[in-house]
Each structure stands twice: as structure tokens, then as C-alpha cells.
Amino acid sequence: MTVPELTPEEIAELLKAHPDWASAREGKAITRTFQFKDFSEAWGFMSRVALLAETQDHHPEWFNVYAKVEVTLTTHDAGQSGGLSQRDVVMAQAIDTLL
Ligand code: H2B
Image: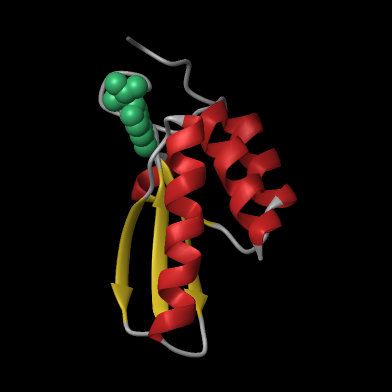
């Protein structure tokens, strides 16, 4: 099932509304790095994001080293070979709200 990709204008709006997120993969994804106090806090955050991802049926790609978590949002089902969609906007908003 194909999900509509965001237009360049919608991507610009997304980055303006969520300035802590950066464009990645030539505009096909957004990424944000979170720095926590220690692994326990980082894992707590990841647990909360995981539950959120399940409720949204939209899952992050991420990389964790101790207190650092790098989150990448993209929609695998968008466009021809993945891209940004409204689902990523909702997730970025929800993740920012968690903090
Ligand atoms: N997560 C992300 N990031 N992109 C998707 O296209 C996606 C997903 N699709 N989580 C969902 C699951 C899909 O595979 C299931 C079958 O609904």
C-alpha cells in the first residue's frame, strides 16, 4: 500500500515546526539525536517511543549508544522507495511532546 509523500512545501513546514529535526537521506527522512543522562533514561525514552510506534503502526529507525539515541523517521510505504509522509509528521510531534 502506497502512502502519499509530503510535497517539498510540506517538508519545509515540517522542519520549521520541528527545528530540532534535520532533513536526511536526500529529503526522504528526518533525524534527531537525543542525549540523555545515562542508559536507563535513554532506554526509558525508547520504551515510550516504542509504545507510541505500536499505537501509530509507524516505527522509527534508531541507533542507541549508552545515553545517546539517534532517531530517523521515514515511511517505508511512501512513494516508490520510501519517503516522508504525514505519519512522520505525527510521530515527530508525538516524540517531541514526550520530552
Ligand atoms: N513504519 C514505518 N516507518 N514505515 C512504514 O511504512 C511502516 C511502519 N509500515 N510500520 C507499517 C509498519 C506496515 O508495515 C504495517 C504492515 O502496517
